[in-house]
Length: 307
Image 1 (cartoon, rainbow, N blue to C red):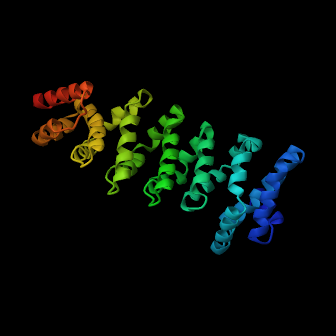
Image 2 (cartoon, helix red, strand yellow; image 1 turned 30 degrees about the vertical axis):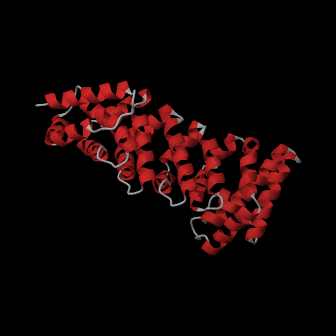
Image 3 (cartoon, helix red, strand yellow; image 1 turned 120 degrees about the vertical axis):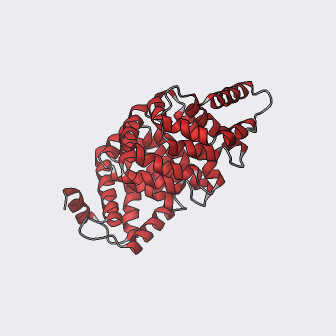
């Protein structure tokens, strides 16, 4: 057992109420005691909390006790105190306790504290080292579930956090996608095929924006040579939603306009040419949207010329 856990074992209060009360008191003391001493108390109490929630590798956590602690955290408004005191804790503190990020991600499952934890996560994601940790941790895959949660507010909040993870730090995201490309897009494709309209629309909108951003050009070049992704765009061109069809077109057009299309992409376009031409002719456009009309006509011409 590590020193971290040994220290927590010695200091752990005996009941969930005492654990949470100790954490709350140490947060409140941050502005009344010597800062270094107060930070030490916060660390000790959070270490105790982590031990109770996650176990120590030898003893599994008591799920009933975890539930009681979670409820007590809500009752005592500890999450709010955590948010307010993040500047006092300093980002070095979080960097030395990365497991807190996993805890915050997992809190999206709790209706009472999900939105507060989402706010905290987005504050953490402003720092590249913290964003990198979340992206590369097992916790990141949970966002593909969270964006489809039945509670609209929580699902939307999770999507906002998900977007921040993929847009705040270009270098971090590029490295992550380079090494997790297949895994990421396999999961993302499920969102694009979701039976939930809101999920499908938001996922398609974000993808159309993300791939067309200049920093993501290498990811886009890799994406547009795969038939499996072309077929997804073709299916989305048939969607009942006008907005989804237009977003799908903005990704689909890159497959067609690519001057270095592999033969598999050309064959897929030829196999679906008649249907595609019909879908493109019927693509809804807004009055005065000349640019979209021009792009649509150009793509139609290119498909007609394929051989």
